[in-house]
Image (tube, rainbow, N blue to C red; front, side):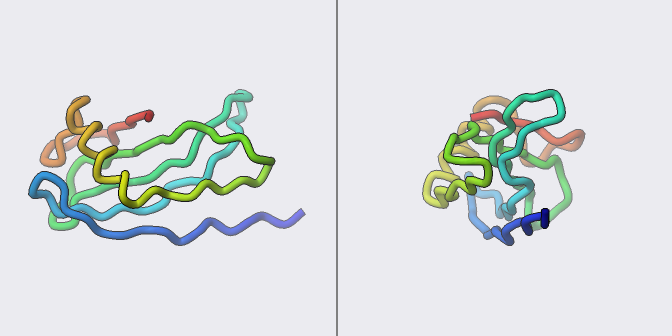
Length: 100
């Protein structure tokens, strides 16, 4: 069985005055514990190295190899929700995991 290649997705956006870049961190998978892990995106400041935000979307059924589309328009909204939940783009530390 051949391994599928990860999609090369990413972009830039400005949220609340912060220049950010986002990229695909991982496709949705089944974890070794038997849980479903949804699509994950990495968001970081473009101008400086600070705390990473990991947006984890719900697992979507659709077959073993489903690759959900990324709602690029809703990404701004999701990042703002993570900021309201405690992610500060200026802070340092371990990545901030935000499950949607």
